[in-house]
Image 1 (spheres, helix red, strand yellow):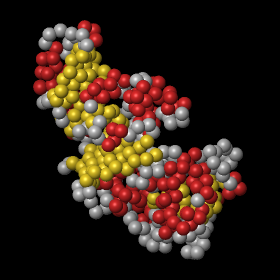
Image 2 (tube, rainbow, N blue to C red):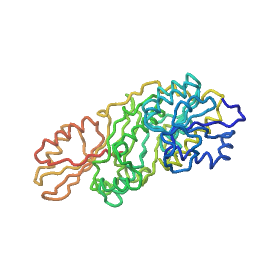
Image 3 (cartoon, rainbow, N blue to C red):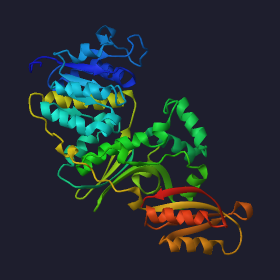
Image 4 (cartoon, rainbow, N blue to C red):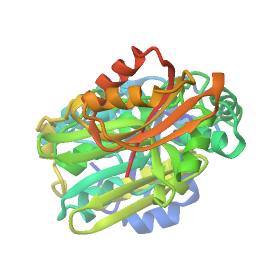
Length: 429
């Protein structure tokens, strides 16, 4: 390992959009990085799939290799930055790095959300550090504040807009009346959405980020497969119009909440009151709203993705690692080895917005109210819209367990006066 006066050498695993941004900032901000870390920092090796691949920023090809072993076996490298994405071979490389007592900085949300426990335990065995600020919220500082600044408080709830693609799509649908398909196509043209956008629009990306934040907030290892997820593909422009009339905005929210029997962790479209700070977050920006028992309400806002914002968060982790090299890790995250108890979605209590296309004749509302009553679902507001073939009922319930609401929905679908239930969206107070 390097002596205290020597440059700290970095091994960069991956050099796509984010990796090339990291290299660019290390060169561009060398003086400031040295001052912050108290030692010079340099990238001495880069693992890539192809050396001649086009990249957003100029990178020194002379230090590139396509052979992982030449980098992983280099005894002069102190810190590895993993920006490959996916779980393999990233997981195997990360475990090898930690097994040799080297430090790991990663922006890989999927890796931490699925294999966080394994990585933390491997790091403890060799006194290595694992840092992952960039895995949630891109350039937004959220992991360290959750771990350190709020370490003496009890976090009761997290609500986050943690996927810029879906927030952009819902913003365009709300602002311009675009359909989901039209807004998605625009997001793809602008590079906000991948050719296969399923990880974003179906909630998988947000679920991984919520698993990480929940593990930190509730001091137990929660994995992404424990997080309920529901995407935005069924949200209609009409729903956004109805939401606006009722005083709400629709966002894809990642929500985790402390409960007596465990925690709830879920990702789904949500109607938020217009007065809530998250309701005004537009475009591809991210924000995380944290409610602490003592500190109260906090919000973290900024660019949630992108090469340079994410690279900035990565280098912040590098600074923290370098400044504490030679000392035991400040946090061993032993809590990650405690399995998190996540409530089944059926037990989670929510309010619901529902639209029913109905037959336009007397007694319809009474039949619908009867089904809700039979399932102990109380209605907060009911609005009838249209006449004839366009008759609709738009309603919002009081808080009710998911199990009871689903039973009521099944009962409504059996009524001869209900033609279709085109929309159901949960409502956050």
